[in-house]
Length: 421
Image 1: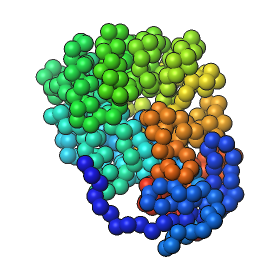
Image 2 (image 1 turned 60 degrees about the vertical axis):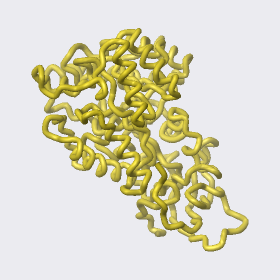
Image 3 (image 1 turned 180 degrees about the horizontal axis):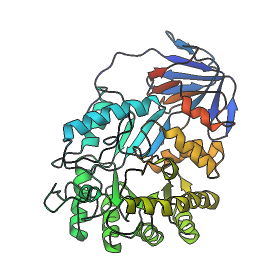
């Protein structure tokens, strides 16, 4: 689908006190980025400016590449952080309107790319996140670039079976294979093929139980090895990666050995399994802040007990993953924490042992590698003009990422509260 024709934008020169060279890990002073036709034309002071260039002096800020969140669900939660799992009360239209608001908030907080990891709601087979991606790409509404997963693929009663969360009675909210509820090799292959046919650019699979699951201990493997291999086979033959919700050590190992590309959470991984992830090049999206920031006060007492047991162990596991060199990409699991609060995950990664530069790479270069996007994640000539600004020096104080004051995506400014604006 072709993007809607837009009014041509003049070249723009962004001027700031400094910019971050994310590869060198150095601040460059002053920071200047020339943007032409939605891409970065030059970094550094240009010898000459194209005719009609608009100069935007942003003042005493640091320019960074647009940040990326590798695990969100824009169709749950909202600006007020209410996250009702009420699939029998909200129809797909309302869910989509909710996602529009969440997408706008996410973008304006500096996140120019996200992976929307799996619808788990009855839609009649419509891939709502693919539709939202198209609307954003066409310029109908504001939002980050979306890598959509369509429906998360889960077994009956699995952690991502939406009828599980509130323990629905039989026959309430029947779901189809096309909507991700799939059992056995034949059904999981069909479910993967359906998501890819209708626009999914990553496959999300439920490989283990979760903390907020009513159907068994945290981390128990939920798909057989054969089912996991079939999912990977179907996705990889179509050139699509697979992300797995996975917590238990043996389930993580099974997912890695099946060829899954990215483990979401990985809360109970052993050192041996983390070493296997390093060996195989498997990514980890640790979603570590939710282990201290997720509100479980209204959860079933049994689930609260699970969280009290698992979350401290999960924080320690993330630290071990960082020390052992696992490729960790930033992901919030919003709305497990509020949409637009990705900076809290950056702070948590630093608390777990990353240097601020490593955390920023987790949200830029590592995330770009995870989604096979060589057109973003750096301030470099030829790449997409996804540029944000924060006050002061993020290498000295990662918390400045909570105060994003300028957001440009593809050369279009979506937020500017700089003193120089």
